[in-house]
Length: 334
Image 1 (cartoon, rainbow, N blue to C red):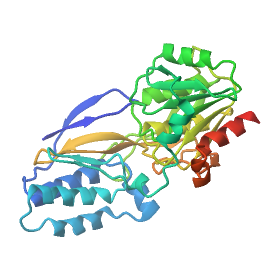
Image 2 (cartoon, rainbow, N blue to C red):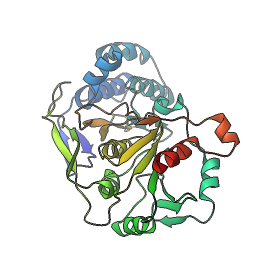
Image 3 (cartoon, one colour):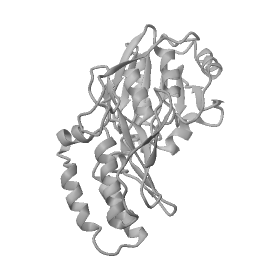
């Protein structure tokens, strides 16, 4: 019997025990246990079969051969991480005392479209900090907010102060480039400041059984207007490939609002809420268990497109200019 911990941000926390087949703490036993956990609980097997031909049964046969014979713990870990890599999911991780297995190809093979060096030139040293938000008014009276991680806390008071400071600006830039996610509640709290009526922003489902098709019906998700200060003028959200998980969801929310535009590159995705379990050897596996969709009921697991696809250019970098910020400023000036 294994304890399975659901880490869900939209529904109450559940800890449940389920009867599972016992596997030996051997290379073969750990591989079989991991394969079965994914087979019964991972939420994107059918979707990824459709998207790029993932065949989880074929994966089983492939890796069954790789764990034959004697393997060291580190060799086992490498094989199991390779097997999880077949899922192409940045939310899938294998944790051991000696290493943390991860899939990073969702952003490694793409342009960064972000530079700390350029950002320091725009921010200077006179910017203000309100908990997780760094902000200032640029010299063309455009407000700029940098939010590096949705793990960084923000309170309603922080947001009131930031919006109040920007109240006379012509427009607002919210820069979430390289934001790998965090607390979905922070994403919802910030998005509510740009919402002026109850807005359908997406759907989610629950896994209801071990089959690849065993899901509940889709449940709607809404953002409601904040009861505090809200932003009524045009706004731009800057995104790049490293926008993931809760940051990806924030981009999905913001794209539904009429006064907001997304500028930059396709986001990284990560539309599954995580679930954790353990292997006979004690290693912990985390993976996507609750699929998320946008307002059109399309999966955002592989990210979303910006309204304006803008890439950082070498010429702008040489001039000390951030192409995405400059494009946003021109867009807001119009």
